[in-house]
Image (tube, rainbow, N blue to C red):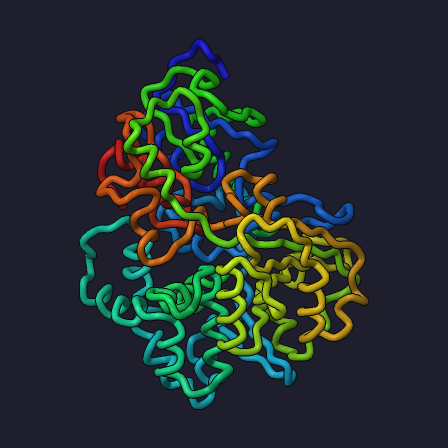
Length: 475
């Protein structure tokens, strides 16, 4: 980085949103610099050997449906930069104590058939959105706007603005179907009786049936690397291992884009943000954290339900009531005795993740904000409940508490991987209530992290739309 050089734009933070902003800015400007504090680009899409040599683990995000659904990423033809997607036919399985399991298959009709008496209700709910996902998803993944298809969006809003609890209990008869939907909505880390939690569950199901829940061959880092190559091909410059604490650490530029959360922005010296804007940023709310685990395994997880051995992801929670209680406890600062667990098993589909005959597994559970508690024993006992003998196949483990997640990536404030609570109020008023959420009180300084619309997830659209705030027309 040439401190004496004047750049057109500087992007601070090389997560998916920072990379997206940098790529889009390089379409218009000749000199764009991307600055990253870590050793590698990627933010939430990094991979490394957390356990044993030869085992590749995704440090945070591992299944990437929103990356495939992202209208910006789809423009980039990232396969030209070596990116290869792998699609499990069964994106998700949800096992129960009795050895049975429900699942989401890529084929909506196969899923509906497995739901038995709830199959018709599930099809009626999901089919209109799956069939029109190419119009629905881009509209959902935008800041507030007038929808291009108001009738479709209104239909989605009619169901999605409800609480998951009320939608599941009113439309479905089987407790296991309700648990399946609860597990999907629980990704939002918001109590399931809150408005709009149904939307989170519905979107994940729609993604499963339309674009799938893919993983990246070789690890999520390959997605970040492909985006970085795309940026460099446009003349972009990347500097790593450069933490920015003051504007004096940066070269002069016409525009600055920060892929960081409000808390980090407030800590940077020399921004000259107005007192009113700073007060508004200080009111930004962060959510619960996660405790993240990875395992090197002798063999695949010995699930009681055979379908779980064919699924990319597995959700652990016996019922809507149990999952609801776990989310509620965590939101109140308490650790549940039966945590809701999200688990992925990449090596079943990607042999590059582990030595021949060996396997990897990845999981997290929600924990109170900022918790430094190692809950690995609790998580492993939870997995044993549905896969007796799991501990016997473990060769090595890694555990990152919520506090450790923040130390790894300061954007995960308190271990919050969503960049702030995504409840109905803060989803589209992040980081502040504004018609121009990416702009700060300084005309040439923008925020482009997941703390801006459309929020958390690997889609790059926070960065894209922030860059379009200056450049012009949108997707």
